[in-house]
Image 1 (cartoon, rainbow, N blue to C red):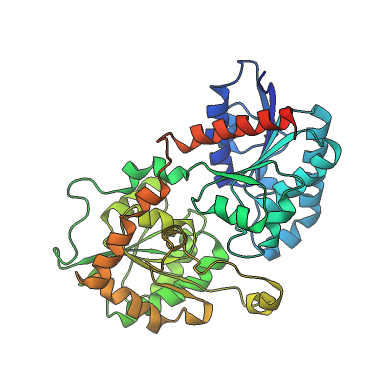
Image 2 (cartoon, rainbow, N blue to C red):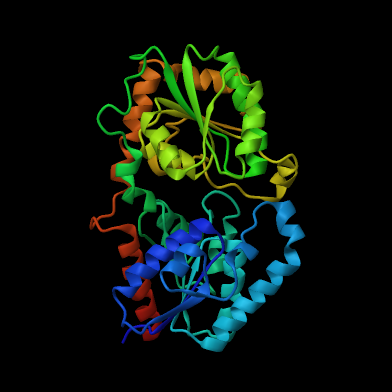
Length: 392
């Protein structure tokens, strides 16, 4: 017996990409007539997933945009749950975007208690609001974790069963890492090659662009001493260009994925806002300093939020050490960023120590059986479905 009908619900483009890889791996294991439906973006649509509506309807981030779209989001949550309940699939996979997908899962579980529900991408219960782990147990049967420390975090916090299935970035090491001649040794050209990543969302980029520009200014960098590349999105490029006009040197702004990866392969150091991009840079072997400026109201929420994690950067969390300097909110000043980045622009103990630490990420993230993350995710998903059928 295998599932014949699978619902897959994603909420944004990154989840759409993960969902597409999982669907492809599941199709290889299921009968040819297995049906997939749910909420899909272009990647899952290309894998034959039938979508209930355009995923862009719910792909909003940030408190302001969410409030503005709240009636639509609530309607789509109910519509998605009702569709899953009506079609009674053999399996439901929710992919990331917990504010949307977990609400769908709770509604579905209330009506279909015997349906296996798998969550692909754990919420960051290890970082903040740890009570979410135990709250997931009633409606999630198994969590597919992208980070190797997450299964232990769920065990410690009383969350659902959780298995590390690998991060999709470990399948892209060939694109991230330099080939012969792509990355010069620091100082060899007399020109430091930096990549600067202020954030892929408008609000995050607006908070970091002035900070990063002032840090570069304090470093004394100009067109004679450094070449700076800023990867961004097509939608943000005009704003990034405008904000970079006050920088001490004019950066090269690129918008494509291929151009971003090429910049990573050439970069000798980086300045980045905290996010998945720090893991991309770390796997690319680029020493970096990172910062994160919170929204103005975030400190007001501190008394109501329990913070679990000792670090904010994914590479530091995976390595279990502060290998990469990370400066958060009030510590994110031009002076401190300058002090953190300056030693990385020359061959010295700080740069060598960080490069050695980044070299340990492969071992920390490697899957024990060496399979691709999507293949591992499919195998664990089907095992969770079989366990649900067997019952307690």
